[in-house]
Image (cartoon, rainbow, N blue to C red; front, top):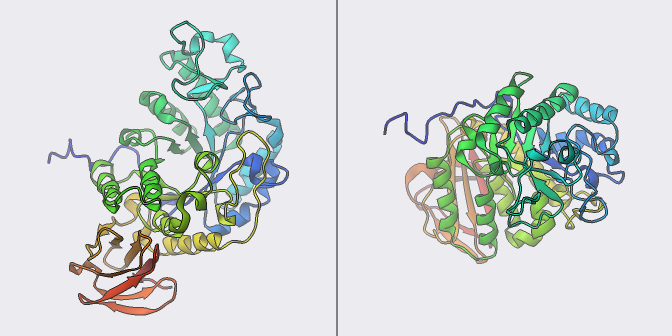
Amino acid sequence: MNKATSVQCRYNLVQPSWSADSVIYQINTRQFSEQGDFAGVTKQLERIKALGADILWLMPIHPIGEKNRKGELGSPYAVKDYKAINPEFGTSKELHALVSEAHRLSLKVIIDWVPNHSAWDNALVESHPHWYAKDYKGDFRPSPWWDWSDIIEFDYNQSELRDYMISAMKYWVETFDIDGFRCDVAGYVPNDFWEQARQALEAVKPMFMLAEWENRDLHEKAFNMTYAWSWNETLHELADGRCSLDRLRKYYSWNERSWPTNAYRMTFVSNHDKNAWDGTQREQFKDALEACIVLSVIGEGMPLIHNGQEAGETKRLAFFERDPIEWQAHPIGDLYASLITLKKSMAVLGNGEYGARMIQVPNSQMKRIFSFVRHNRDEKVFVVINFSNEAVEVSFEEPLFQGQYTNWASSEKLVFSPSTTRVLAPWQFEIWISGAVL
């Protein structure tokens, strides 16, 4: 294949070395602490760092529109002023303190950016009504086909709107020293705008950009990471018994052959949308939850932790009201911490090009067992997951899995040979490693 046309070519955007084994952590400031403000987040930064996170994603921090507001407090994605702070979260001084403390702990901070639409009572509606899209009647319109009645859409054919939006993004970088943006419904905004924005922001400082979208070409010049929505949907259906295990294999085939090798895909079992509208992590994944978490951290992709997952994510957080997280020690938090420690201890488990590809290990129970290796000359990780509600005895094929390993959880040592079999309980996972110090 001609290198110029190969989908495996390196895209222009180069991933920063600090992100080689990074984990991202989402913060809903409103619900994160009893006080629901920046200071409440700052107090827990050391705990988040100890969990293994490297990137903090703050949900929108801007004032929320009042016109057509949903609920008592409204959606943080209905932005009333792109250059102001929601007073319920605190002051600019407290945001400075949060970012400063995060940087002291070597944490990066990205903020949610909502470029596709604004609140109905954003000042731009009066000052620049031509920046907004119109419906067939000539009226302002929410995003079509969605129940987003509290917002109206922009029109990115307007060059002045693009200039304004980029200047507003630069304001937060220059004033608060943030490290990037998570961009809401990024695919609803033209890709050439994102390329413009990235270039302008990089002139201020290096950026880390996350797109809430699943599109290969967003990685070419604009985004470091995109959502692995199809990964999440596949795991959800597997947990419910609504699809075959081959669908998961198809995701990884697509990821390997169709996406650039240096693209980060964000793998997750929960986020604010999933939690609010689909249920808690346990509601969504039931007995498969732990296996899905393992794959999100040890498989290809950068894992996301939605705030509260480590405390068991005991409830669906209200989206338009105050509903503080119920913090507690929990086995899910222990699992995440242990998996992230393993991820950071082995180069093969790195993100994108910094890690090794997953290579499928064929087995005797392909309808139930998902098995793969990630390896280099010095390290090897062999993962076996039972994605079924039945106990399964399995053997493995081809030589890649063979060798001497240590069980990640129990420290049991085992030599895998062509005749080795394993019996896995329903939804059980095993992680075997070699070439690393436990």
